[in-house]
Length: 255
Image (cartoon, rainbow, N blue to C red):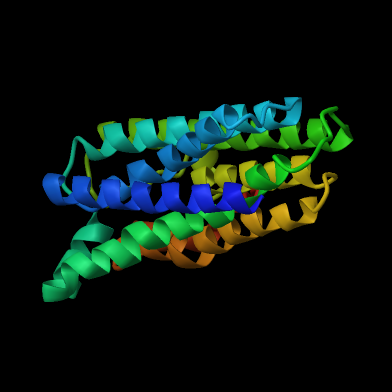
């Protein structure tokens, strides 16, 4: 176990250094958003070729790869059509002469640390001899499919809206966006709680709950909702939307 964790930490450091160099070449830090999902895919590939191939391991690799691969592709296509994301460009201005070392530590190193924390249930699953599926497996898989649907459909609806809107003050309030202001975040939270459920009956599986707790906290209070909604300050349409629509967890029944 110690050898495995050491190898994962070393790979994580190399991964952070690689994407930091790419960001310097591309002159944009939002490349880190693409690296986020791909990091999980890379970890799953590493664990697979390291010999951790029980049925439950393979299920987790497939689920995490589907999530991470799709998310990185989606963000890569989206970001490739526009300038650096406003959150990162704002940091570029605020950090000034400290930009390079703060980018390295606060974007790339911190991202890998969070990636490794969120990956805990995947690593925990490699340490169990349990290979049969349980009720937890099927409940978790059902939850994951709901979360995946919510995120994929939410992203597609937002893409269509952005292409068709005629006024920059317009706010998407139809489809899944009628039920919450960030249905894609809701989908991501559900997927990681689902993975926590799948791992729960394993030895020390309860440790895996750290992952969805961290993801939920980050999206609700740190890098998700708060940072994204700052750009809507002064937007009357969004403020009205905000008053009647919950941030992440959907209200399915409207008056």
